[in-house]
Length: 181
Image 1 (cartoon, rainbow, N blue to C red):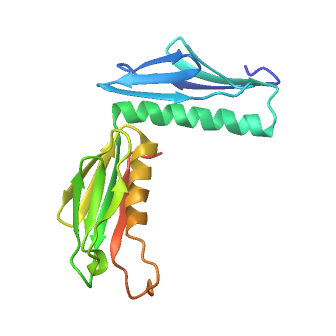
Image 2: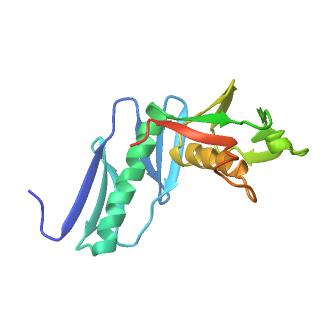
């Protein structure tokens, strides 16, 4: 029975997943992946008790109620990330100049975009793995924020300025997000 003035959200920890609190951060680990995130607020507490993560706030204001939900969503994404992972698919589109995309270390290189001589670069964040298969770019990793930000970096690197976007539709665009809530 819920206690008046207490907001308590619980997230079950699946078998094979370890979760613990380390110095103000929550650490979730499984299958060789480890994610750590600082979730701190003076009136919102995060704890690991009896096979579940509890996010609580006593007599929460509107903002603290939102934070409880946000913290719980972050923990759910961390658990899903270490167990299943996240996968984004992007499509390479060009009509004027054939562009060449490749991965070099922690950078994604886009060469011959609109006939430019110098390659455009996009950083690859965290443990995200990027693979180019023809005109499809596949991004996979345990951290939803690193995977989605890497996809956004690639999309922004091919942003066209100074041309009519209805005619020059060249670029690399997100087509599919798998494993996201």
